[in-house]
Image (cartoon, rainbow, N blue to C red; front, side, top):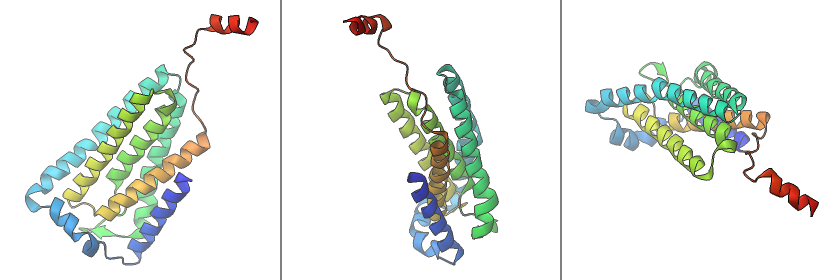
Length: 203
C-alpha cells in the first residue's frame, strides 16, 4: 500500500510538472529563503559530501552488519532496489518530465533519490535484526540525512522543493515495492535458553 500510494504521488507530481505547473511561482519563497548567491558553493559542497561518500559508508556498514546477523542477502537485494530507484529517476522520469534548471533536467533530484532510497532500503533491510532503540536511531539518521540533502540541493539552486518531494516519494515507492517482493526478514534469534523450554514441555 505504501509503495502504491508513493508511486502514484510521484506520477501525479511528474504529470503536473510536465504539463507546465509553475513550480517557481509556488516555491519562490522557499527558494529565496534557502538559496542565496553567496551560499551556492557551500550548499553544493555539502550536497557532494552527503552523496557518494556517505552513501558508500552506509552501504559498507550495512553489508558488514547484515553479514554478521545473517541478513547479507536481504541487505544486498534492497541495495539493488535503491540503485534501481536512482536509475529510474535519472534515465526514465527526468527525460519524461523535462523540467529544467539552468538547462539541466531537474525533476526528480538524483541526489535526493540516491540518499533517500539508500536510507529507506538499509533501514528496511536491517529492521528485523535491529533492536527497538537501534531502529529509532537509524530511522532518525536516515530522515536527517535525507532532509539535509534536500535543503542542500535546493540551496545550491540545483532543484526546487517539488523536485525534492518527487524524489522522496519515488524512492519510498520503489524501495517498499522491493521489500514487498522480498518478503519478511529473518526472525530475530531467541534469547530464551533451550533447556528450560524442554523442562516445561516435559511438565
